Image (cartoon, rainbow, N blue to C red; front, side, top):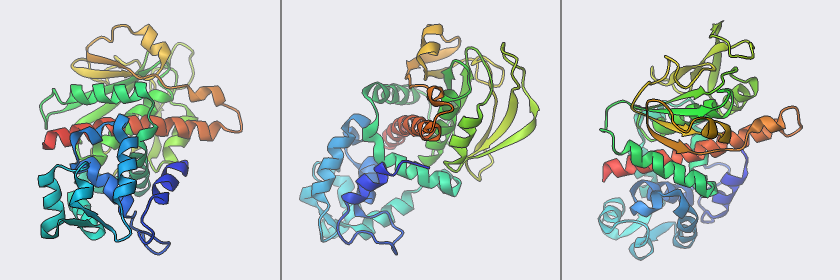
Length: 327
């Protein structure tokens, strides 16, 4: 289950009448945050500015449930605000909701319901990213923006055993790409010393709303000789919203061999791979290993925390790419 802190923070800033138990809409504040991420000044797509953005929004969102042109000056370019607000120069909750619904990418609509809700919540918490992960998101976005839009773009998430963080990274990367309507960007996973897709990783993904189904066969085993079953990981209803995952080297035939971005999500893989063969760019983004909590009373919580940390980094990168392409 996702930690409630993110949603509670956002809901605490809602205008008093913005939401209720009978109102399924996320509320004016959350819609306004999504709208500024989508159409606001480019600086607001950067995760390092997300806390400052939220501070501005908490002042801009008023009891009358509108955002005026004066309040929006630091949030939106004038022309974009005028298109959203219309002739009355005031952006209402209904106008925001309608604009966001109209703009929703088809691949977001096709996400499995639980996964879609989870991504929407994670997108409200980009301020929680650590500086090194903000930097990694920015580097990934810059590299993707050098590639031709609409053409396949590949990213491989690398860790040592390809059992935990790298598979969380590839799945959350694919979810983030589809959430922002860019199915041509595809994430893969690999390791330097393959082991097996860990059951705790599977649990963290299924609790997010992702389907993980054993295929009934096994991939080649790593040096430790442990069983290495293959799984279908499915995050949406579209035919491309799934991947086959198993533990493998990053250079495995199932992964891209050249012209891909490599994201190294553990310090061991970062040290072991000063050069990632075939990669066009190498981006260190180490996260603490949830394995350290295996067998403890907080095991499930720590795997979900790591999943969410990685998910926010992927969302931060995809948000930048989508908006930069639309300028």
